[in-house]
Image 1 (cartoon, rainbow, N blue to C red):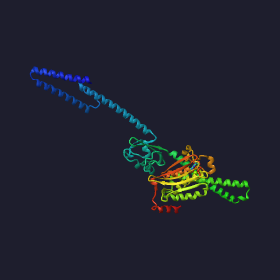
Image 2: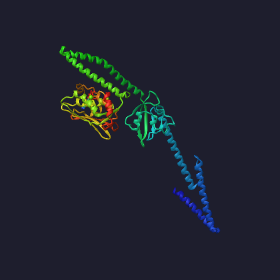
Image 3: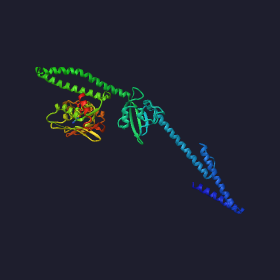
Image 4: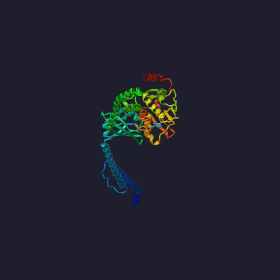
Length: 445
Ligand SMILES: Nc1ncnc2c1ncn2[C@@H]1O[C@H](COP(=O)(O)OP(=O)(O)OP(=O)(O)O)[C@@H](O)[C@H]1O
Ligand SMILES: [Mg+2]
């Protein structure tokens, strides 16, 4: 590079020296030098013009032949152009490959900006959601998928868990939506057809619900006969008396199990949900207190700390089932001398219902499994206390329905605390305004 500049300047200086000599010989130094400078300027302009013309019009053609510094400029630009064209071609090929592979995916893929406006999608996504190019480009995804669950999922950015919804475009198709945020909080949305899984799950739920329902009638008959037999218990031999007591206990247990299974099925099928209302937490607790008093022994101390004006938005029946199971568990799993505290605490961010006991406690490894159906820490302990292991599964579902979170803290030998954290939108503390709601609810119960 340096050499070419040195040569160019040298050539120009030699030319200038020659012109000066000729000028001196001819006696017109100034005129000859001026002519030389003008000639050089013309040459430079001419090369600039050729360069500009080549850049604008000749496209992929090789640059015109020229020597010196201008030849070097032409060659460098031509090389750069060729390199750029090559990398552009490579990028285009890569993009086409990505596009054709995502288009071939069975899963739907959507790219949306940080506001949720659609930017790009593959064929499967178009098929699942009924998207049309180019009309839907730039549309908000919540305008296309008009589903309240999806709206809540997307606007509140609940992307931790996948969401299952009905396809807005294909009837009878269920879709699982999974969203990941990338770059500047843009959305990458994956859509999977889970119709088969959904139907299988539905079949399982229906089977459990139907079987439980069908078991109710024969059990009622058995219980009826057992009650009649119990009335004449004294006239029966001692061995039969024991048998009748045992059968009565077991049929009670079975009834409890069936009721829990039916409640779980109801909770799982969202369609059969009750309408949420503003409830007085103290009313709920009063009902629980009434239910708990027969199973409470003199050896247990049960304390309630519930403010009178605490309000919670939810279903009375569901919350009653959940809270009562927590209180009954605390009683069941606390040996004599145990202290149980039932509390409601609220601040501007959340409302917390908690049940604290000084009972047996639970080992940390069991805590994540407590809300599984039929899970009991100690099966022996469970059968003695008559538990079926469905209580906390019911609590989990109720908590989910109320946008709440269940927290379990426990130390074996020292006791446990089960707390339900409700969001601010579901709690209130005004004492008077909602009196009528609760009264109406109580009378309807
Ligand atoms: N407060 C507690 N202290 C110690 N262990 C507990 C407590 N609450 C629950 N557990 C353990 O968790 C298990 C699951 O509780 P869950 O309420 O689901 O079932 P259950 O009480 O056995 O039966 P069910 O409630 O259906 O009658 C219990 O069997 C018990 O081992
Ligand atoms: Mg229980």
